[in-house]
Length: 295
Image (cartoon, rainbow, N blue to C red; front, top):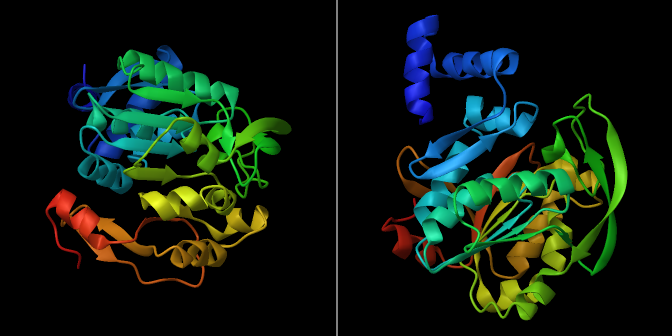
């Protein structure tokens, strides 16, 4: 059953008026009387919802990163190669895989064991194992071992190689994880053209970029990247440094306006609380794919 049908039935029975009330009410009922569940989040794409996981709640109840998801769905094409860096439980991984099928591929990177297991579960329930390569390691500016602050008790999405900026109230444990360089990974897998990279690594973006310079210079993929000064500062960087790094390689910044179905030039800010930006070297790449003009 799809969420839309669940929503109608639940609202009729319980008298909720707004969509978010319906979703929140259903979630709380499942927590009390049911259990974890699986549901379609888009046509043909199923997702496993863990009732203890905060990101699952945000996806189900709050339409987490709805605008960014719309861009990924609109941009990717069959046969594309998509990198999901900081994949967590696999929201963008499975959405991307549905778009690049049947000849394309998705390379997902998630260094923490528990979210990586749920990521694999979401890949399996969608029969996407031949499309998706799940890598249980992180990306950085060098190969080796890196310490990471792991947020527990359902808050794995806030874990960071720089200390997490949000006080989730959960226990944090510092552990070590394996890291690789994106450039080395691309060479090892003989990847000649990445279409899109989604990068959300809680402030570690600048380190990932340092290890990806050769690939970004040669292949010029479009990048959907998170700008958050608090997280960047905890990782020893800033969004200014992140922006300057990308600009030095010829990237410019845009935002997707899903309501009007258009890409808009981004006016650079001095500081960023939380913002996902689209970086590309030539706007024609996006314009030609999506049949739009940049505003």
